[in-house]
Image 1 (tube, chains in turn green, orange):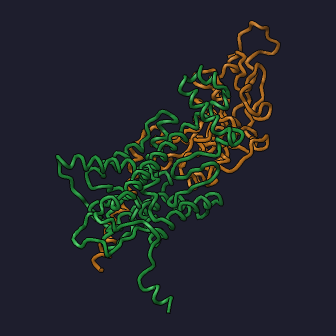
Image 2 (tube, helix red, strand yellow; image 1 turned 180 degrees about the vertical axis):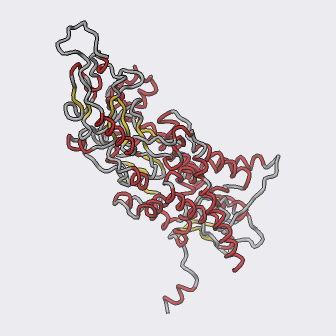
Length: 314
Length: 227
């Protein structure tokens, strides 16, 4: 129970951190501009105001620790789609697939950016969805709102087949091949959120991707808890498939588990069934750990399949 | 199991159809700007290759210290959504090459911020409208020449500071367009993507006689110009 709470708090904190990071990176555009044009806090305050001066000074101090601030600041940038943090690239697997389909060629840095996301998925499964994805923070809030409103209204819980996500992935790749990678800005919730934040903060403009976000939000509110994450987002499905045999997984102590209890299945936002050891799309959000009455669930090393130990130790 | 497979297939097809409707969304954008080609950041590959490689990650716009790179919305159709563009009249490129350094997919080829790197850029081509230009009307201006990053190469001055663009050397950064004091601007960048328009304008320039000095030979300072 304690562990579940901790995980929930950590997941909210990390996702909030990611949102703040995206805002900061979008503001970094202004920093580059001010650094290049004024290079003086006093001039920044005179032309852009006090708040901008504070931001400018803090950013300058932050990057000065690593070296020349103007150079260091340019090592970070981008959105969740393709991002550099301190010179380390991160690439979305979908972006990599899209580029592979369209131009049949990966740049080295672009391919290296896949390493960390893929190894995360191989180690922990779909943790991106509960700990990194900034859009899932929005959907988390909406699912809580749903709980609140459920006292007054009845909400349906629709479900779709897994194939729908794969279909969106295939259709998106086909559309990308047909017209361009820009289509992903509207298909992927976190990319839409990144675009909206970037346009809003860097240019003070309302991005069209906001419309896409609203559609996803309404789907979540009306169709089911975290509907977008489960049935629409192809990234989650892809990461779930990659991390199907992840090193760490949700484990159940079968002796402690109560036969008649299905609270973990009911509470799971990903519609995973920990009770039946079916944890394929588990994002380790910790909701089931919190609710389990006998604390028989835990996150740990995935147990080897039952037949394996017998055969390997004769 | 068979039923499940059918369900998967059905859901797969239903899912695959959804993104294919997105191009229709692009039709919602303003129709007037659909045909207009966009000025891309320096180092951009030819338009078709550029669109093939650009994943709309926005890192070039993020890193631009001049804030001249903006991301395209729906105004040019969904195929350009999120790709970088430069509106030269609003804010032109200063050829610092920061964007070419960070592009993850080489949609913008790497260029160094040196003189050679500067000269390797080919974003577009500047064209002077002699009907609008102050200098061609006999009022000495020369603002575009002073803004040009390659003065004497990409642009030279005729008599009374009339700008003459040299297509082989002009990199199309747009600093001249940004600087032009005339409204509307008398010098414009035609993006590299709009090759047909560049060819047409060059052809027209070739057919026209080179613009003569607007002043009569041996004119006095207060003589009116020829036209």
